[in-house]
Length: 276
Length: 236
Image (cartoon, rainbow over all chains, first blue to last red; front, top):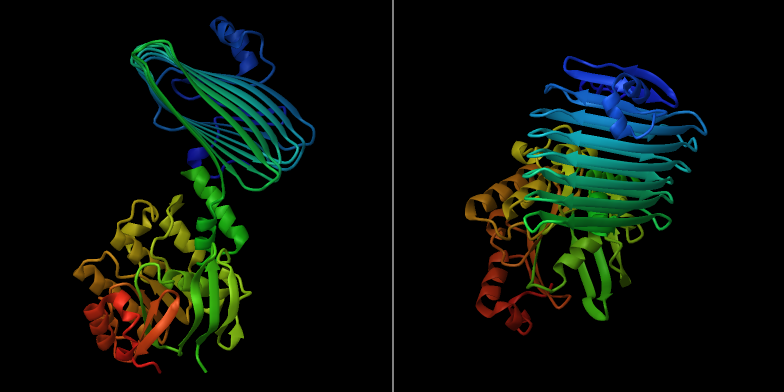
């Protein structure tokens, strides 16, 4: 399913192991990662080895529209091995949205390593949504590197309906006066299992906030969330919060007292949690 | 036959008797007040009528249109025409009021506060905004009985009048029965109930058709002393 609104039309689109679209625009180079490896030697430092799959976004100019990537598993027993690199040059303002999902219960496996480099004085608003279904296996590692005065606002929303999900985020606030706000949401239902580790590293006169919140919809599901902050300077200001809870009975009762069925009320509460 | 008839209702919460052999009724289209101090069981009664299954009932029955509704879910009770305006509704962050209204409304035309529709459900609402929001929700439903739990608490005179006018226009004038649960009774002058009950320690200790007489008695003797002053209230 391609996202419907024009704002959400993907610039990079992959279904199973097939690239449907990789289309750059003025000031933005978008390529499959293996082509970027061949074309730009400097990327070797970031990819480490020649990538099998994944996308490369090299943003050289501010663009008014949001850049979107969409990676889906639609067929059974597909393995995706993504190696993604997003490189934002100096002094830019960029909005990015990335969606990874299975469209049905197809026992898909998605492994991803994503590096997001934000150069001096740039601001990135990054939204990542991952939605996986029964018996999918999803492992992702996101690394954010911020240079001097770079700013990052990130929201990562992970939904598991019976899938095994393992994620790790590392935010490296390397440059002076860089700052990051990372919010991670996890929703587990139908026996979904989450293992999430999120870390923020501050080196010098930086600011960062990390917030992890989980919602467990049923008794079969499980969420493990380990947030961490690592300060190596007394001028770094880092904070974190974490919470995992079930669906509030008070909210559920309130919505049912407006005539909504228990199922519909639960869906609305989950949606409100993910949208908040 | 009454629209709502409660017979010998007993409720215990954590070993404490919250409602004690309570009998109560409302006729079709009637406006009835229930007056009582904090902790007297008013809100518990309101929630039980609206179907809050978290509250266990020891014994008794609740008949609505002659049907025992105790086993009905909250949503089935709304379908039947019962809804409660909460005193302190929960905040639902991430859910826009306009999306919420679209999910629940059974009518195209209802009382709308356009500014509240743009906000998230009850998030950061002032006391007055909560009451307006609750009324907005109820006016979008097809109802026979509304229960207003402390709808007048924390409101200034202007807001109280706005709330009362909305209740009259959308409910009383359309034959919807109204149960006004109140602590201090200021709104009664505007809604003019036909019967006023006083509840203390989970028991209705008296009732009177003249709400002014009840308010006068309560103001003169306070609720605590009222336990001994049922002679001031006709016990019909």
